[in-house]
Amino acid sequence: MHIIDRRLNPGGKSLANRQRFLRRVRDVAQRAVREAAREKDIKDLGKDGHVTVPVDGVREPKFTRNPSTGVQDHILPGNKTYIEGDLIERPPGGGGGGGGSGEAGDGGQDGEDSFRFVLTREEFLELFLEDLELPDLAKRRLAVVETATLRRAGYTVSGSPANLSIGRTLRNSLSRRIALKRPKAAETAALEEEIRALEESEPDAAILDEMRAELERLRTRSHRIPYVDPIDLRYRRFEPYPRPVAQAVMFCLMDVSGSMTEHMKDLAKRFYILLHIFLTRRYKHVEIVFIRHTDHAKEVDEETFFGSRETGGTLVSSALVEMKRIIAER
Image (cartoon, rainbow, N blue to C red):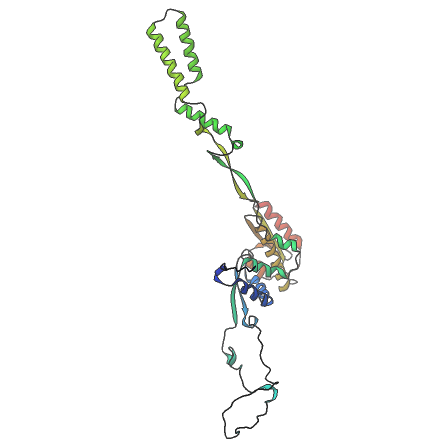
């Protein structure tokens, strides 16, 4: 059996060629992703992004003949030095023809020295997490989709009998009966007692007939206006929503004294990026609080947190005290 897949690839491009390209330039793209992570904010890292790699990293390998070995025939025009039938010695080192002197970038001129392409979110995270040596379980957690549950969302006029809201149905029934002036059972019973009392005495026939007609009218109206009508029925309605919906806060604490090198700061930023990606998959709203400290701590913005340097000693407890203060206030 032969299967031919004629489905269009995303963006009209070959998905297979794209994957082969990423495998070939994986090391270069991985370094480019790490460089891009330093430039991006924590909240923006999980999105699609542009990655720039050098042209040397995207050139395809190819086979060429070794000019220093083998037998090669050439047809050359004659001149004053050589005539037909003369043998020309091979240049030392296999050189001779030239070529390669017209590369872009020679002569001090700028050429095309980079290749820019777009990585999807999944491709970016795969390259970003690959060299962190995380367990497979931790990598799989980043791809977990939020589970949905049901919550109350008002009432509807149709539904399952198990979801019938008796209280709301009787409330609608009472409103309808009051609006349509449905006779009450007490009014009908009182009129019946009055008619029965008149019949025991010598009543006026006209008055008695009038009261009997009124009673019949009340009974007929009670039958026409039912106690519970189908339009009164209300059912509890449920709708799915993602969980959890609680808000989360992420505290980023880092020492910024002279002992912190750029490599250590880069590791800290990558850790906070990974933690933010994890939290945004499980919470709708994630607030980030940056606290930097030496021997004293203070809350700063993200640019100051990763970029600015300070001098002083190291007292970790000052950052914990500042974090506790922010939790108590907010």
